[in-house]
Image (tube, rainbow, N blue to C red; front, top):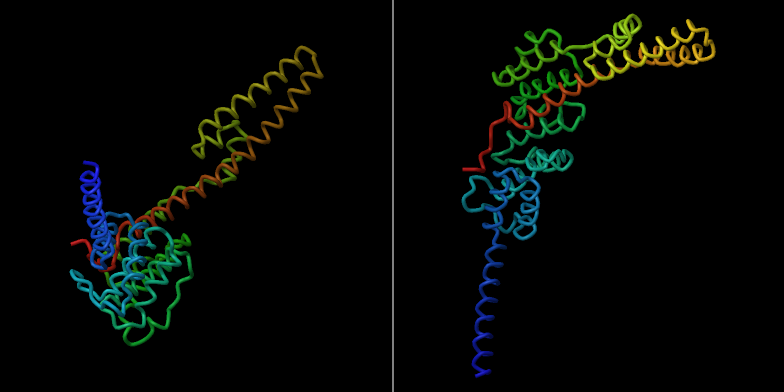
Length: 300
């Protein structure tokens, strides 16, 4: 009886082991890894997509498999492009430019769009844009309007938007023109607060400078404290409690001076926040939307 149970158990374990082994073999098939990496990329799971793509490059080097079934692009191109875009979306711009740069001197069908992604990633990385030799050749000359669009975006990043209509004439793509024009309008409509005005307001009415910079709670607190200590100083001097009056006057003067200085600083912080929100919106727009770059659709 025991031998039969042991035999059945052994047979069952053998079947399970073979099923697991077969599953592992299927999981490690280049085609399956590629499809899984592509699925992760299309779902927006860029970290796992990059890890699976790197695993795929290790298991099936480009020299062993030129095309992957179901892909319109060579194996190496498909994987490198997914890696470049995944790292770009993860804000790992160094790795992103590394993979996109592999296309620049190639004959890949993805060369042009990868070159555009390379310029875009350089911009997002914060590097100074430059006319790389790859874009000054006769072959790459047609990319100059695209490059010029990013030159204008670089100016916007530096909070400069002068004579945009004239400059946009050199940008051929309508979506690029619209995106730049919209952000130029946003830049020109940014609300700035004058530190001098904020200080003067608070010198006249304590806390009003901070309210002017939309820092309402601090403005109200400054008004209450400065007024309170001013009143206490006046009341004690009136009652001839000169020591206490002088003490409250000193504290009140400290809060009054701090309220003026703090209002000027509050205006500078307000202006800095406005600039940071503008830059964040500009970068988010470029990251979330592939403006003026042909979309490579791996997600069919």
